[in-house]
Length: 508
Image (cartoon, rainbow, N blue to C red; front, side):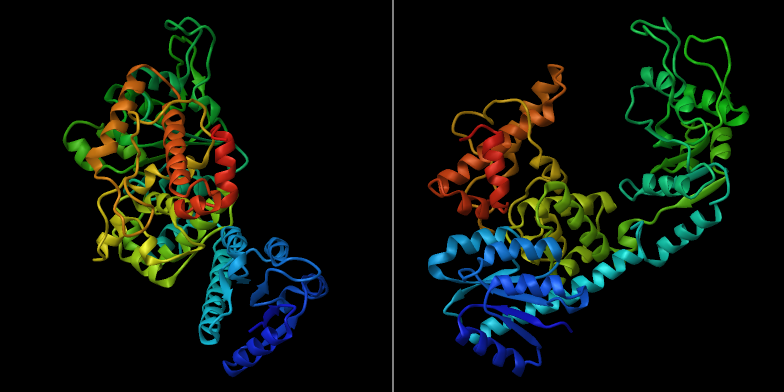
């Protein structure tokens, strides 16, 4: 194990920690200033770096906060513990939000300090193992036996142009598999074009697939190439194929049979060299029996079938996926990626995940924004996960998908949320205070969303997100009498995030 680096200009502090950690068989290396630490990092290799860094804030030769920033640039996953006097508490909170593992107030109780350092060591060792596993699985589809069958199938199909039908529940990653099939096929240098047939109105779907000629219908002022032409030489992914209108199924069958089709309003056949991969969450055999899906098209698509397992069928992948999504969320939001405790991973693994991998990704986005500390504990998980694990949870709150990374994107429109004086969250931001009942403010949100949608607005998400964020930040600042760091801490976001939001939302 690598040594624990102790940085403090007070020799007595260094001596006490060295002796205490030595009794725990933990190697140490001590420094009296931040400058020597940076020089040691420059001189040494990655293996000679620290397992954990414990640093004071106020020292000659550079502050602990500056050291934290520079060390995190070199070792993003390194746990850093900041030691501080009580008078430096605001600085400690800033460090905490900036990526420190924990802060240790002086004077400290020695056994508690050793316990904290031991926790940081355990976390560091877990993160090293997790990083090795992540490196070993670059495509991040999973290591469970159920997924190994999928990997083997992708490998067997790597040199084939055969049509593939991917089945599996919503959110299980069907498009990821389709992209992997394309990436490892002879068509990898060609385009990969995806279309969700359930998301496009029936009247527009034909034009989307096959294109149209100029003047084919009102508004068709120019000729437009459809998805089949766009995917020429590559792969066309038809998601939710089970929802395709019956009359369009006939046209699709013809294209799959001879590779020719006509643009809407066209009279000349167009040839497209396209590999088709289709996906659905529905039972197509049952759809055929009910008369909703053509049997001949089903057999044309069902040449090779890949079934994706639900996330609950490969629970051993959940820790790896959760760490991956937390890293991803941190990069997207420009913040230090949060870490997750073993107890929280156990609770996640026990959850059924009806929304599969997509739901886990949304939960990780939610945790990145809402979890109050850098280390995610089991108590920080959203109520639906805690309730599934038998842990008492507060009143119902929106699903994680409604509070994800998009809430940190700067919205555009301006208005107040709900009626005068309304607040989207009742009570304080503490874990023990439940959110307002669903009927209180979410009904108003639903009504506002419906009104904007009915009015034909195309910026509804941004409009409502801006209202939500403005009112939430204003409420937190009022609760903390304008103290931004404390407001950010109560909201579970970083100091830089709340400062940026205040500027973007015009709350100065």
